[in-house]
Length: 143
Image 1 (spheres, rainbow, N blue to C red):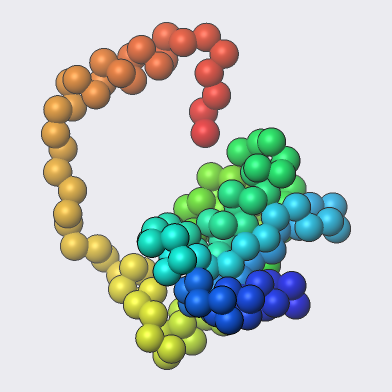
Image 2: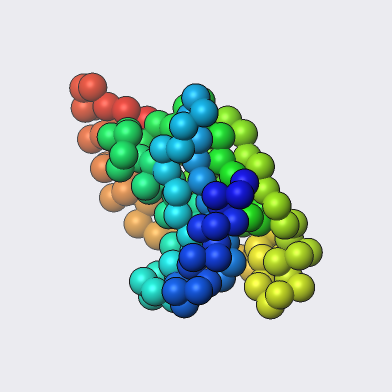
């Protein structure tokens, strides 16, 4: 966790974004790390966990981080939690909770509540054609 905290400090001192740092460990070795870079990259998906997952995937040459543990300075938001699950990370340790994040001005709490319905199905039949093409492919992977 100390290294995740160091990542967070590095990020805020560089003006990259909020105080969110993350480290990913496998078999006792760090395989990925990152901090919030939302402001630096002008990209709302560049949370600390996302950056660490991208770093670990790049370093391992795999999208599958099975057997890894993730250490982060704050409880992962739903986007990051989803990415953690997609990456097959087995355990998450976090420092601050959602209320702590809220207390410093971040709006994470609203993402845990029922979202406003902003979705609408469109062109389903044409999209199903692409799904059918994918289903027919050999040697595909489901991730």
